[in-house]
Length: 111
Length: 113
Image 1 (cartoon, rainbow over the protein chains, first blue to last red):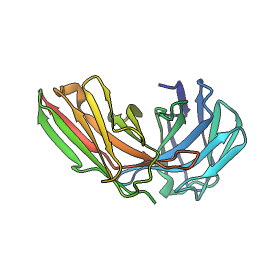
Image 2: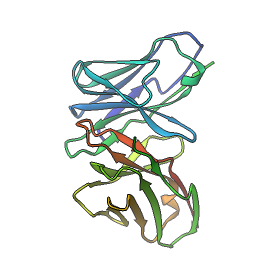
Image 3: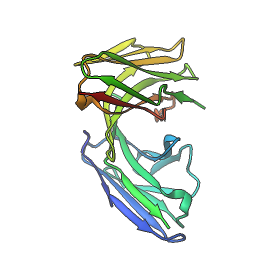
Image 4: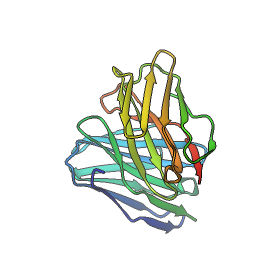
């Protein structure tokens, strides 16, 4: 457990509204990741960060943006939510031995 | 792109049985392989990480092996218990600096008391 918290834990929103999910870690890990988990697809990488203000795209980045202004915080933003973005979102960090640790997840429903 | 497959999708065993969960991957150039456990509605708990230079890792009743040449990893659970019931996920890490993980869809294990 790398001391990862996610907020909110649950959110229901409407199509077209902006949504921001927050990930906070207490271990000072350099790498942070956002994944989404959908039935039949497993977890897929959305974006990752390798330091403050250093981010890059993952496999399913369309419609998402991220920001990292502090080592401990990694934000995921859906600029205009769509129903296809209904999912469970997980944040992860990478420890010094390459092991990845996951947060508890955020369940997002877009109506 | 790395493709990770886990078969079977679901498995039921009686308590006390030893069992093996399978994971296969298409790109042998993985940096490492990690096994996770996920309980319903919860996040992922890391079980074992095997670096590409290693053949296996052990933690308690769990033993994970890695064979890069055949594109396979197995997770062996000894003396299964009802508390082992969960979904088990494997993920291969790529060789970029980010070590991005590519996940299988998991095996849902039920241990029957």
